[in-house]
Image: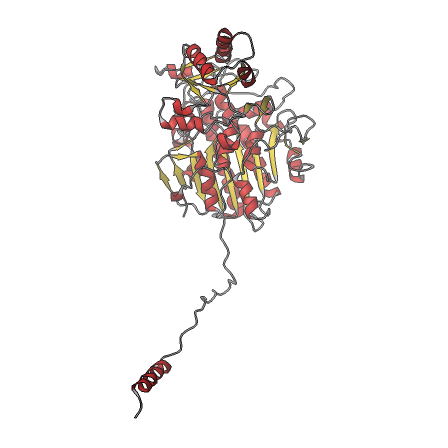
Length: 556
């Protein structure tokens, strides 16, 4: 008789061998014609910065825009409550922040010009005395991104493709081309008003590429200065603007009044083509050069994602001359709308419709001209450039005796002489108290901020953060002089910018094209969110100084 143990083992063996054999895990069968999957990316990224574009310009002129320019970009994703996240809203810092996702406190670009304590002198944001000009014999090309201390979107694209991507920066202004393109760019090109050429520096190579030389040989600026800037619409259709003859608008060179039509007189120093900057022809020239770069560098046509950074500088020159509600400003934007439409049509034709992605923003906004604001009873005014700086020097000399207590006053910041203060054993807090007493009596000044002790300032948290984000110890001032809304320094005609107020901080952020989910948001986004949004779209590491967050709802 067999034991129970034997019978149990026999039962288990019979059950086991009666089961079908287990299947070995396998990978899905490959789809016919695809040997392996690859990460999808757009063929080309196009960054567009409009110099001095307030958010409301998208809508004030909306009914007169074409469907192919601003309105086409707005049909993508529109971050409608997009703001700068730091004080000192100027061109250099704006371009740097857009493309780095950073802030002046990290990237070091605290102004167009600033006092550099390590150098003991004023420094320009794109200055580089170690390089030479390419394209002319002057010093206009002694520029590079070396003052920028962090990486850009373009740098991350170069790193993420092992250098295979091409990155090109273009603008009339050197800083508008250089800072967006970044450190590893293949080239950055800007306009020389003396010779009428696009130039560069030896930071990028030994000579201008052949396509740049060919473009310069076309002498397009000569054709533009031979024309007049005429209004593109009948004058009675500029219903979103004031009439054309306002005393707070600044005439162009050689003109007695700031009225259409405008011509182009030579500026001092032989700057034959300088006047083009203050006209829509500057934007047209920029667009034509961008299209030449698209063809000459084969951008988006080489099997790897490339990047083209284009800054349209002319709106800033026009705004500074005529203000925010001038017929000239409206005409400038209506003509820029057509240039954007042409650029995007050419991208469709060259790179392929749906194969490229573009974003548009601005480096800062602009205040309404006090003369205009006052016609509506809105508080506003103008201070002379020397009013604050001279009063600060006088106050400290009265308190502490003769000496160079103030090194400079720029970007609404007082730079104090730290060495002299240390020698005389005078504390920063004591100096701040002296300046506070003296300057708060001046018209148009609302408060002084001790940038060494922002936490002690009684102000809304949002404003306090703006000052934290602009303070870079060796490049920033010590005391920030905050003016009342609607006030600015140094000009009674035309506008300017640089404050913490919404008219300077609220700018567009539009995304359009490959990988973009159409829609809009009214939640507050920041300029620092642009770079991480683009790098997230491209599956790249964000720039090294990035402090923003991707706008997730804009990405498919």
